[in-house]
Image 1 (cartoon, helix red, strand yellow):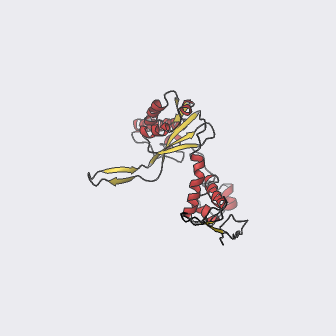
Image 2 (image 1 turned 30 degrees about the vertical axis):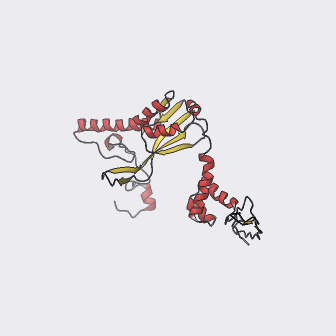
Image 3 (image 1 turned 90 degrees about the horizontal axis):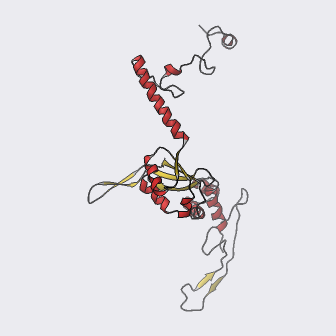
Length: 268
């Protein structure tokens, strides 16, 4: 008798008792000697059905659920839910990459760096980088294509080397920030592609330059530094000060109708 766990039905679980038959092999050289019944949904020795494991992995992979939340919803342990996710993730990670016309490359920070000291030389070596490089389909619907640890030229070229030559030839444009490292890697790994800088970083650089010019102009004309940044993000409140009054943050003058109606006892 075995009772493998299956997907719940609504808010209540399902009990699945199974009376298995056991066979014995008459061959003396047989290493197993005995066998039990099994089906694809319930392999031999399985405590969970394949349907339950698949549902847990797809909930994490496709529905955006966390591992701990999927484990709680399906009454599984964290290692079981994580292993189910790894199994379902192989269908995506091992699938061929879709055709990409515009490849996006950008860095992302993930965790903290980890260093280890060499026992022979007493030097510290970086074993885990805090920066990762992501590759995305910037124009289509491919989403995240890959992610590698590090943000050097070698890291970018190492990921490009894992792709097919025909796939790399289909890339016409590469969108990056103003990183000289990524630009050099593209010129080596994708020499036929056109490098495009995304507008966010262009506007960000222009805003930084405008702030520097405003601070320098303030120092030359007024003999002091620019004021602290206002709520609008501008470096000098003198240039962007307005006389408008916010109805939610400022109080109207004494004697106005609003005070007369709501707070007639206010002292002016």
